Amino acid sequence: MKDFIISESKNKRTVLVGLITQYQTEEQVKEYLDELAFLADTAGIVPDKFFTQKLEYPNPVTFVGTGKLQEIKEYMEENEIGLVIFDDELSPKQIRNIEKELQVKILDRTSLILDIFAMRAQTAYAKTQVELAQYQYLLPRLTRMWTHLDRQRGGGTMMRGVGETQLESDRRIVADKIADLKKELKSIDRQMTVQRKNRGKMVRVALVGYTNVGKSTLMNLLSKSEVFAENKLFATLDTTVRKVIIENLPFLLSDTVGFIRKLPTHLVESFKSTLDEVREADLLVHVVDISHPNFEEHIEVVEKTLLDIDGEEKPTILVFNKIDAFSYVKKDDDDLTPATRENISLDELKKTWMAKMRNNCIFISAKDKTNIKELKELIYDRVKEIHIERYPYNDFLFQTYSEEDEE
Image 1 (cartoon, rainbow, N blue to C red):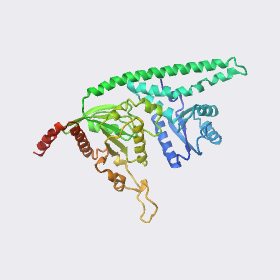
Image 2: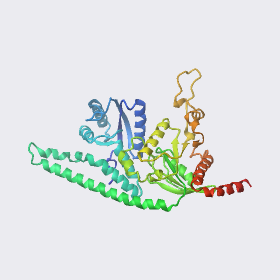
Image 3: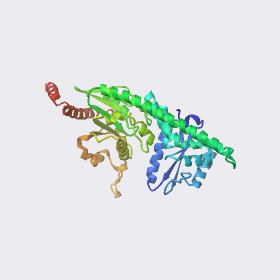
Image 4: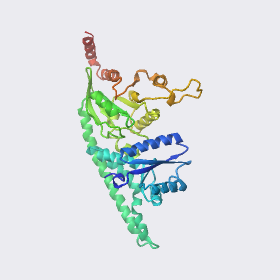
């Protein structure tokens, strides 16, 4: 199944729409829309303007108020824009009503992410997972594809059955396709489970983190491989596994798909099998972009997603990446207002809650290769602990290597 809207749209400019509600502050919505703009850019779409509105909760009919919808319509007509993207998932009713009013293509955050995944998927496994998520998203929205039959119904009941029969037929086709894709994924899962078992009992380490935090770059540094890395969201969809040897100790290192806030439920479900590498890992290396102003929220998103995929608590190292891009504005000495994230230096930040983590966190720059040696030593120590606990009779090997190193 191809991407939903993007490939069909000749006009690559769009407006983005978000709501300020009791659950989303104005500052949060601005950041969410910035991220949505990054998603649009990843998909090859140019964001033209942001529209926001304060509402207690989304309008169940048109998401935003009718006045705001009219404002969006006028701007799009004046600037010849043919696509609008909403930051939250829209219901079939909302999509139908908004399309009727604006007469342009509509995307929500979920369908945009699904489109990006469809474009990024390379292997048959990833393509199957994305296709399943797309059909699951499409199934409850099939009604809007048959609105042209409304004109045929008139006042009688003769034609009503035609539209309903067609809709029921389409739903059955999509439901059958979903069932087939699930069977196909189960078959691939079984093959991958066998592959994982054939890797033996080596310690497994998994790189996890928010999307675009530098996991693939770090993977390349640690494994001396050439995993695709790009400054785009979801540059990596397929899990990559490499055998890594630090000093005398071999282990398996996997790079997984990045997480994101408001990740579509269907995608989480479809990619659970891909994230088996995370569930079966002995150690997680959680990579964080410390230069991002809301990196702490990103940490929460990743931790919540790990819970959603039934990932039990595991030993974790927090790797704060991109210290080369960290910046702050120093407060004036006579400024008595409370310090914010923008006013705290990296050294001051390290003395906050991070100080309590001690050796469970490290600050690096994968780009400049700063503290990579220290990171390798930290991973080595953690993997060694797990290895000795699993194979206590091999402890003498490490003692032997240590003695040789001292000589």
